[in-house]
Length: 366
Image (tube, rainbow, N blue to C red):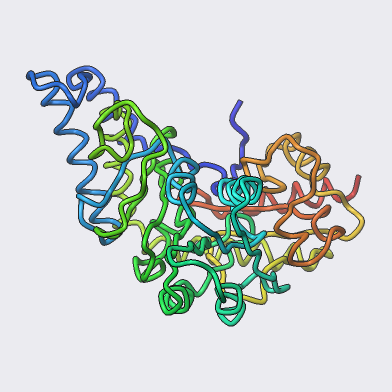
């Protein structure tokens, strides 16, 4: 069943009706293998290449530099698994931190940046971490944090990394479609995912500078210029195209969404909440809050019973009882245990906000 009020857009966004309709049409007439040379294959390939062009237009890149993947997790892995050394932080998505842990297990140097309470990394710390590391070391950061919405100073981090002969990989999954391309300017590679843009799940992309093509993780085919073998689904690619087109024109809605987020935050703070990450510039649709003495996962469950969908951390960590590593790194374990993330979108209404506030009021009285 779908919750009456959906405030978990950072986990996934509801697919655009036009994307669903167009994907159904493509599934009927362009279902062929894009690698095949016959008419069915050409129709499928046209869908894939049209999607590549639209995604490139959205992020300010050349279509030749867009590699389709199964999503943001694979894109992050593709960018990082071959790194000779890595600099990152506990703020990142599990598809980065788990790669860092794997590289450490293989004997490679991984340096973890200190995490300020604000959740905004210090460029000086990046400079310090890069001392004596080999050329080709990768610095991996998120353009905007998936739990708090805190926006990183990517351009400054890129300048620091490049001055030391390092590369910069940016997890832009939560930023693309919400921030302009300048927000990941200077990245050598960056990851995106269609389902955060109201497109389908199961497709994303790694975008790279022409001279920074990644070494393939998989073997078995020449698809995606040999950098990511495997058949690209033209149906999913079509949905990605529709979402990328939409995202280029959806930005005027951001101010309305921010006003609704601010209304939620203001009232929840009056009810005793603290806001995690509000010391730094944040995405306007995300709020990470906690109520002292209340377990975040229990509050999430209570709100669900009242018809409001929120989360207590990354969707990739959902179902675990472990407190958020991100809030723990920023503010300590007690704040992490209480953390609840609310994320809004274009279909969130003023009525949704009021219903959510009423549900919080009821849940907090229990």
